[in-house]
Image (cartoon, rainbow, N blue to C red):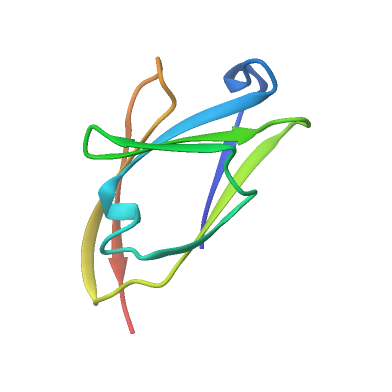
Length: 92
C-alpha cells in the first residue's frame, strides 16, 4: 500500500489532482485506488488523477501488487508543485 497525504493548500474547487508515473501502474501493479478518482487522464508518461476532496486532511491510498521483485522509481506531482521521486524496493 502506498498512502499519500495532501495539505489543505492542494485542494482546488473541492478536488485534488495528482500525477503519477507509469511505474505506479506497470511494475508496482496498482490494483485499487481509494477513494475512487473522479477522473483519470493518461499522458506525459503517467496518469493525472483528480480525486474528491471534501474533508481535510486528504489522503489517497494506492493498493499495489508488484509484478516482480526489485527496484522501481515512482514519480508523483501535484500540478504546479515540485515533483517527488521515490525509489521502492520490492522484497519477498
